[in-house]
Length: 221
Ligand code: DC
Image (cartoon, rainbow, N blue to C red):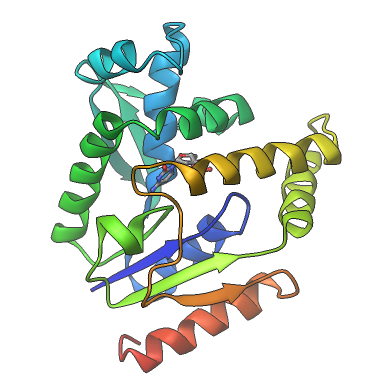
């Protein structure tokens, strides 16, 4: 059984999916981390995101896999655990920029489908319900207003002690969403059979409870 959670940046997908996976005994798969690992490879080699032929040639040299340490997903890029390195905004933006290329997506979608075939997964991303797992038993499109998502990111970064600017974060989120929603290949959109959930005015627990209800209705829990 599989649960697909899609939505824009900062909607709370990973927080919610991790919590649900733990209580339901599912494996949590963060697909954004895979795109980020791929992006890190290009960034470390100064490959220009706009150079499609160089990106596509380089994809052949990238091996990405995931494993779990204490239940937490780790991303392995050509043998190196890069889970710590991929969380920077710069990497997220590069991931968004290179995820437009079919060669990049093909490689990662194959890995994601293989993982879902071998376990009950809760997978989050942008194209899970529409492309990666079209037959998922439950599909959620999790969103929140742009300002709510920016504020959450801001609070998260502040808590980590990082210097940040709310306006710059909001602009970053807006640009990233636009690119993710308007690319030709598997753009971010709500699957026809997905349940729309706006978490702007909901706590994490309230959001999780709404998804539990959807799962119960689908007789998963
Ligand atoms: O969820 P995230 O912020 O870690 O994702 C980083 C970028 O990766 C996102 O802006 C677009 C891309 N991505 C994608 O195209 N498809 C996915 N299933 C997951 C992420």
